Image (cartoon, rainbow, N blue to C red; front, side, top):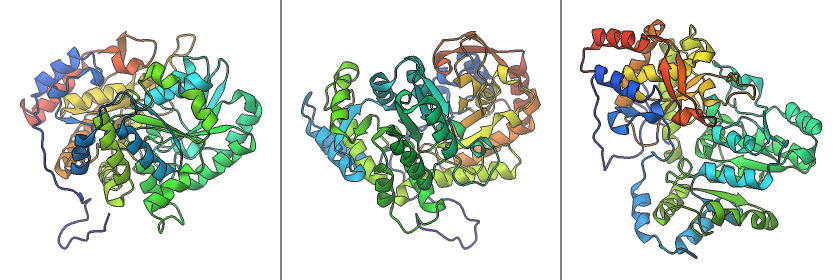
Length: 482
């Protein structure tokens, strides 16, 4: 993205695109939002999208497509087997990653299912820099365990470290020796650690970590779902990378790994996913799982129209003007909140701005899901839908006790090319108001608690009448219609 200097205005992020299609939004009155929150069981996943003003739940499958992506959908080849659309997609991935074998799947968690089914056995240990909810759930359901070895600095809320997603290399080698290589089916590196603020991992750290794995003969797996943000951060933050193109950095990373998988709901800006496998024998050992769980090998449960769009999206993800817009908007949002004194994860990472709920609502115990309560408060006070990323997103221990999360975050995702700067300013303003009235927010407790991935479909209730008190205070300041 070119650096644009203003004559009479403070520096602000500039969109390198223009809007061609719009969708009408509505902002329900406060009292209606309170009732909608109650009807949703104080779970933002259960809200109807039509009742939301600004949907910052995720960037998964909700990024705006480019004109070239949409036009590519018209050439889709609707064949059950041997679709030319698939071969175009596989060829593009081969160009970018240098890996010949591609297994399509309908999204990232489907890839995780295939990898876990193929490699994880009871008692085995999968090592990661940090887990993602579905990646961990697929491993634990098969009797495996997850060891998270992100550097301790990655769990520090306020920081200026550029790569807080780096794995602890000494801990990695010690864990392999303790578990023995035979009991570690693979080491998974997440490029852009979702659950600790979208924090990136450096190329140098990936190179060193995969080098350790090769020393012990252990497979290396890259979750590239948030790769485009990570590419931006490597180019702008890592020493020696500024003069390299995004395409070069992408290939350097790809050359380190045995397997790469991704959700194209994030990487590629469409709706799908794929597993790229370097070794042919390993590819053949997984190919039967695609027809079993997803669809035939040349569509993998995806719409071919989406496959055509994501093929263009992969190429656009090599363009610095495209991939810089998200991180720059996030950085702007994080810096403004930090200036207001709002506890927010710094530096700004990928995916979205992340509020530190432990500090934001420090009077709510973790057993009462402070991040879950805060995300509900933001909907009541502004119509903003975020996502809880804390204890509520964990699974209970075997004895039924809570597994308290390392971090309690509220994610305010910034889908790419969707929100304007004025909408971002609105979010900053409402977050500040909620922070100034944070003592009105109370905890939550479960009414209906699924055993697995409970944050998706669980139903909760407030521990007292704090939502009504919060809504009344908000109405007193902004009126009943806002």
